[in-house]
Amino acid sequence: MWNFYGKEEKGKMKSCTISLHSIDDVKNFVNLVAKCDYDVDITSGRYIVDAKSIMGIFSLDLKQPITVEIHSEDCEDLLNELKEFAE
Image 1 (cartoon, helix red, strand yellow):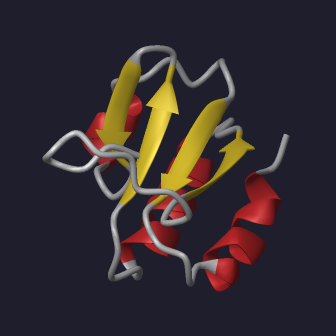
Image 2: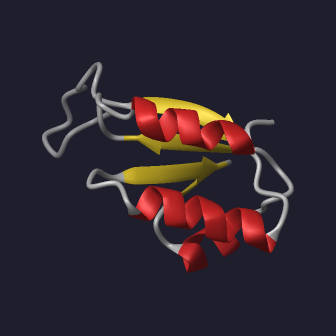
């Protein structure tokens, strides 16, 4: 991850790959990440959106797997909850 000054910050981000197959999956995913007090982004191809934005998620191609980028070192609870969306 690059900070504002262009230096790489190692060890401060974790990621996983998930799939969201239905509207209910998207709603459940947003409800999970909305509880987090740290930033969570999702990446699909060259697009990056805020994972807490349901409109942002629906702007992506959900037929493809998406990468969740969690900007916290202390996120094991969220990673465990995201297993239900694993491919």
